[in-house]
Image 1 (cartoon, rainbow, N blue to C red):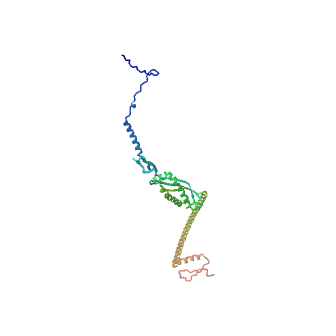
Image 2: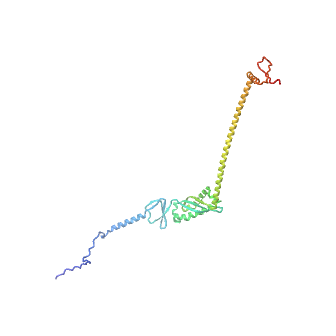
Image 3: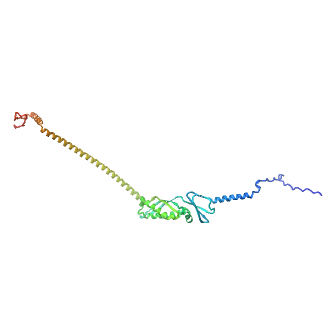
Length: 321
């Protein structure tokens, strides 16, 4: 019995009459080992856990951790590892801040309302970070809910200490007001987590009529100061002239005294000379000769000699008349 060979299945032909190419084998089609997959999964899990267990805190900040809504712990600035990956962390800025207030009303006792611009410098208190976050919120919430309204209220209260609106321009009053505001704000805000460093009054704007009065008063003060300065200058000049006159008078008196002394000295000298000459026989002869010479020139003169032997002459003028 003869067997027939099996028939080959008909080959599928393409449109061109050629069979389709057989697919090529690739190494990616090989099965990946199960151990390799496990190792990769473990590495990814370890990387995720390490990332979750690290927490960094910037300089000047603090972080407060909460676990399922309850306070857990706090972290200071720096790197922290490991930490509980299930704890959520909230940043709390501890750096100094500045809050400006513009056009705050400052009523005085004279029923005038001035406008003041002030600046409040403060720092959050780190030990109360958890209290602030749990009960108030952020630093901005603390500022808006407590710092702003309290400052505005205190400024209005401080205005009641001013008798008139012009008092705010007094340096001592401004310093006392700044210190009083800082003390009152610290008493109110310290328990809430803020420490006030300083309160500064930057600008004061009184009502227009008060401003006009202040300018006029300033002009009057300047004019008065100018007159006082002119008076001082005139007084100085008068004193200078008085001193010069006094010096001249003193000099004249000294000169008069000097002349008197010189005249007295000269008179004394002449008198002394006359006394000395009057007692001298030779001088008497000299005077007699001078007299005779003068009489000789007069034709009416006559000479009588009582003692012819006398060496002296005794003229008698005009005895015949």
